Length: 148
Image (cartoon, rainbow, N blue to C red; front, top):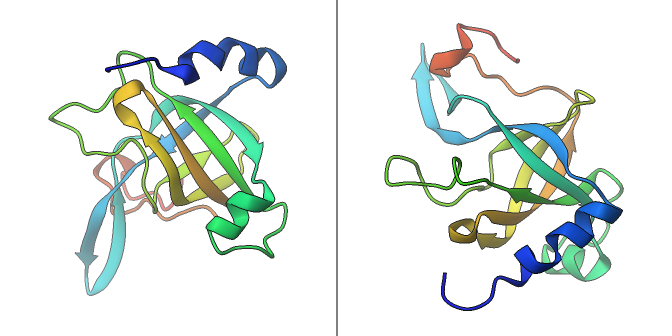
């Protein structure tokens, strides 16, 4: 990176006030046709550090979701030196269609990427809570399970 990574400078202060959560990230890698039914496919789940925060009014307006309720939030997802995207993986770190599973068992859909600083090890995304778990049955690692 060229310049000063301000996020890295303030990270310790942020997590002292509002700690990260260990969550599971399911990255969307496309779709497959399973007996005439198009299903989403996901890469193997990976553990990530996530900081959940409410969306402010300005962010909601920017995302054209002014009337959203508590079911919409934003996350700051961090990657360590083992996780940054390499040539073997896709860019960016997050994109619409990915899922986050919190330790409490709730599922959150990435609906928008607000800031993408993948090269510096973090991203900011808008998320919406899901009522039902996603269907992972088309993913190679799932062994036919619809959700994990």
